[in-house]
Length: 239
Image (cartoon, rainbow, N blue to C red; front, side, top):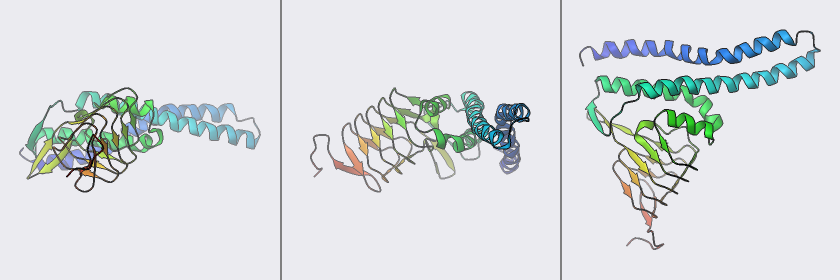
């Protein structure tokens, strides 16, 4: 793409304006609620009023988070790349679109950290393109590139586990799907790179790093950096 540096600087500046706009609009319902409480409690005693306004502040924060999810999720539905697999120049229109989508997710993280795991978080992730099976528990704010991630039923994603559907290689952006089967456990602080497939009932140990395009067969336990099989599906150790 010609003049990519200029476009990047321009969009970075516009991103700041976008942050203010999204968070500001999301805060409007809560602000209106607080203004109503301020007027309605003006005649009450100080401590009673303080308690009501304090509780109102909590409600306003909840409203801010929910409306942040709704705004960002709506954007996510529209702008997320719809690619089964991609390897594109780093300076390309698709990269800009991916970067915009990633920025949206970062704007959602402050509130997302307060509601994981919950159906609210799962709805947000689904709006951003993640396919989530029933009963799945997502305990991480770092399910990135949601449009590239599929998580099966009853699977548990541990705290601060990071799932990345992208990497950058040799001036190229690489996007590849990540498929996690049913009943899996993804340990806390682990890292899953693009193109990985994890079979039903498999376990990835905490702090493990599953390198790109790795495949964990059903029922196996993997761990380490880089992750390797430490227990086969039949319970035996690999030779």
